[in-house]
Image (cartoon, rainbow, N blue to C red; front, side, top):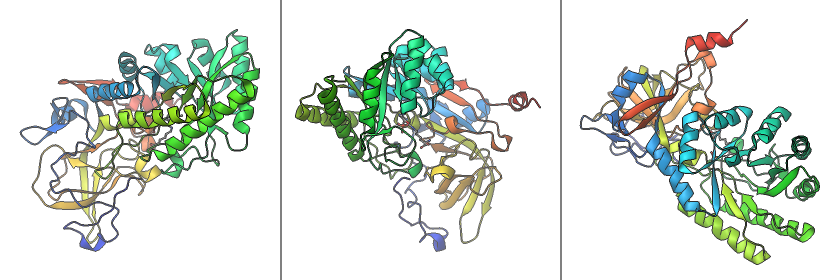
Length: 463
Ligand code: LLP
């Protein structure tokens, strides 16, 4: 998914021409700050530390595999997004990237709002004290029970994703005697440059209501006619792990055009637009993500310009970054188990986790980086594939990377940028126990999501 590919490197020369990988870094011990969270560094002995704590201590206290989340980095990223967009816009963190009660409290303290897309996420948000009015409820197939709970709780907005849902939400709201604030999610017809499974604004997929054939305009007509609904705006989310701002700009332009058409037809200027999430992060040194202030400026410039041209009042903008906030803040720590050199191919390094804690490589062909973190090494680079312990050859964590050739069982290696869509997509495949998430800040580490136990597995198995 990221844009790497320049073969080189001293070992396994015969496969280098296939090259899905970059050249080894000049210094394998160097930590590229693009992919590591902000407090990560190496101590005098060469061990990686986060929040001032070495990985050896973290591994001893919390075990491996485990996700370590740099809390001050998470908070700083929340503030950077909030500051970039300013008081006239709203930042909703997309909880699907990773959600826990601690995360909800941090968001609340840092002034962010929260996007949830299931009853489970809604429960977590409310339980941890997120005010309901700061919650947006998403999803292409919300159940009536979920809609009931969202309306009852008083969520700030429900994003309507289909004609049926317009009626369902209106009905529930009327029964509760309220006017529910809603947005309509439209499909703007943009082909985002990302993996097919995470592109969401082209026409042939399940999300939203198409702009192109007048469906979105019809949805607006219906929503405006129902007294249980307070239509506050239009929503568009074009996909995920996107670097090119062009797709967002087209999306913003089309959404503003729709607002102008709504004004012309109904005489109302909807006050808000939501441009979704989807901003890419660096998984490897090849990736160059945009900073929040660049994104905010690009989006607000285009919306302002288009509104001026259409003689519309500029609507309040909201965005929904998930990956861009939490992704870079965590790494997964693994212990090296077996090491299998395949002559003329590459060396397979097996770790104590795998596709159960990071499915993204198998699912999207995602690229990751990896480093030896329990020590430094001056050994020459060795081309490796980091694999898990599951019963599948597709159980790959890092497809192609370089680690020092003296790597040995018992060494700790870490995969950075695993804060988003790793724990939240983790599974119990092969009855693996999902790893804990440990928040690290200012010399203190605490479990925010505990490791699963075999008792947890047996508790669900009631047969
Ligand atoms: N808003 C909506 C309506 C979304 O559907 C999503 C993500 C977001 C915001 C947040 O997008 P982000 O800023 O995190 O890219 N599992 C995939 C990503 C799926 C994204 C689904 N929707 C992955 O691991 O790459």
